[in-house]
Image (tube, rainbow, N blue to C red; front, side, top):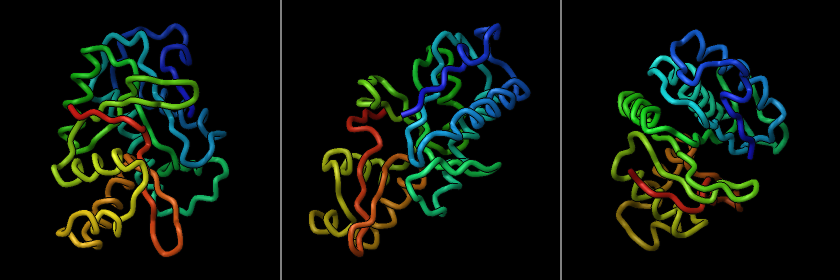
Length: 205
């Protein structure tokens, strides 16, 4: 896990983070800093002390990070440093310590972009152990995420054994979509992908 505190990393910055220009500068610093993180690390963007922000700032920072992480899905992971390029970074983004104002603004942006985002509620040592799912997620992937969280580790075949329809192919598509959205991890075991939650306990809404 890697924690990036927006205010402590940028001394002298106002607790009101406004505008795309500031957001792009902070995003550049964030990407530069996480280059040493291991591939598929959880990267927590910490909003401690941030009182308010704007949609344009959030789009230029945490939304840009999520989209860059989503774009990394088709790249092979070798367990080394996170692949960082203009458009890809192989990490699992999480936000933390949102003020009510920041949380409301982020929710509005996520719903407009039809994207979900994990918000850390509890961090224990080097692991996010409890999170809230913010933003937008359809009913089917939300149900699938709940099943993965409950099972701790599962595959499309195992889920199809418990409930069909959907078929194993249908479950596979749902799980792959959750992985693309950076809500679950996966490892190859034989011919199957095994999926596990990024955070062991997830609440919705």
